[in-house]
Structure formats: C-alpha cells, structure tokens
Length: 80
Image 1 (cartoon, rainbow, N blue to C red):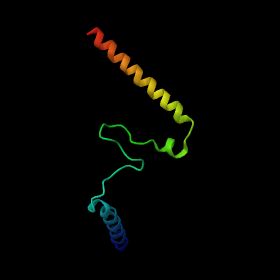
Image 2 (cartoon, one colour):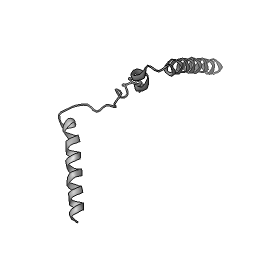
Image 3 (tube, one colour):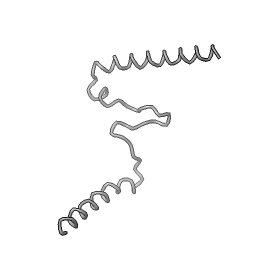
Image 4 (tube, one colour):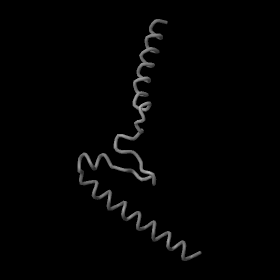
C-alpha cells in the first residue's frame, strides 16, 4: 500500500508540473511547430534538422500529387 501511495504521489507531482505551462497561458504545440489553421504541417522536422536529400524527392512527389489532384478535380468538374 505504501508503494501505491508513493507512486500516486509522484504521478500527481508529474501531472501538476506539466500543467504549469498550460496554466501560464502557453499554447500547446508539437515538437515541430504543430499544424497550422488550414490543417497543413508548419514544419517537417526530419527535413529541417537533417536537410536530407530525400526531402527534395518528397517535395517533388507532393507537388506531383497536388497537380494530379487538381487535374482530376478539373476533369470531374468538366464531366458534370
């Protein structure tokens, strides 16, 4: 029973310590900036921190996907 109370006390202290920032009015955000109001990620941690070459390929793929989605949307609009 003593162990349970000790663990409960430490967990309570941990939760209270994490709540201090929230009580001071600090906004919650992810470690990489979180998500913007439009739903898009504000930052890509891996790419920004490591400047990895895979990021360029990823950006190209995302651009291709956006162009394809726009083309599909226009085709759908033209058929209706």
